[in-house]
Image 1 (cartoon, rainbow, N blue to C red):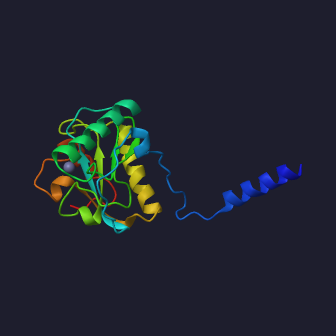
Image 2 (image 1 turned 180 degrees about the horizontal axis):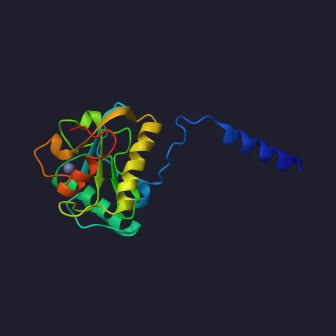
Image 3 (image 1 turned 180 degrees about the vertical axis):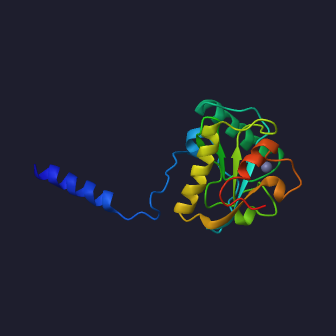
Length: 190
Ligand SMILES: [Zn+2]
């Protein structure tokens, strides 16, 4: 009985802890270990909270399972490190077609996804090609939840600018369909 009382007291204490936001959206993130990432060759610390979020597509096929998305993460990392000569996969995070979020360089390491703003942004890629078709709803909502999480955990400024890659680099990324979609999202900056 005494043990039970302690457990209940601890549970109440944990429940009563203050939260940074009314209710931070906690997104389950598939870690680098879980998708089988290689170690990065180097890391540059990203100063946070960042003032920008940059949205990308990968111009690959879509993926809809953890295994197939993990496989795409490994392929991208190999390409970025072996062919592009980058330190690691370029993006801070990627989101699969099933709504799973995969850790790239994460919240605190500078990415290699949009040269003009790498040192002031979180780069999020949506796995797939979204030129003429939009990502599935789960992929879009997971992306928005990830951004909310970043604001809650102090990695993204609340007044950040959300932009598509094409707005900072001469590229079609993130595809016409996805770009048109993010134009209606909070914090989109024309
Ligand atoms: Zn891009």
